Length: 118
Image (cartoon, rainbow, N blue to C red; front, side, top):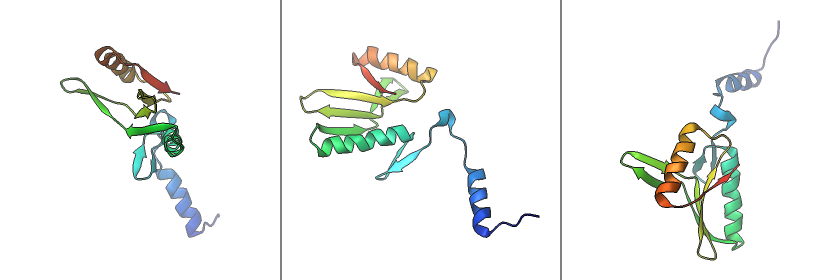
């Protein structure tokens, strides 16, 4: 018969209760912001460093665009470049059918190119 310590049992139950993430991405919190994936959180940290180094003017988290009444698209970031331009960024690990459709509507409606970070 195997005997577990309280700590061993707690570690076992913590692992069992962890819900598997869809598309193998895990929500990650940094600076009070919750990101849908570790990749998105790392991109945020890179943006903070770029801002500190004055490589960019600024950035915005999760800007929302209205595509049609009742239909919205939420990008991950807008990055404001030093030359006055900006990039609308979506950090992707997996492209769902819904994302592909919304991307097309967004690009057609706003005549803007969405930059994907894979």
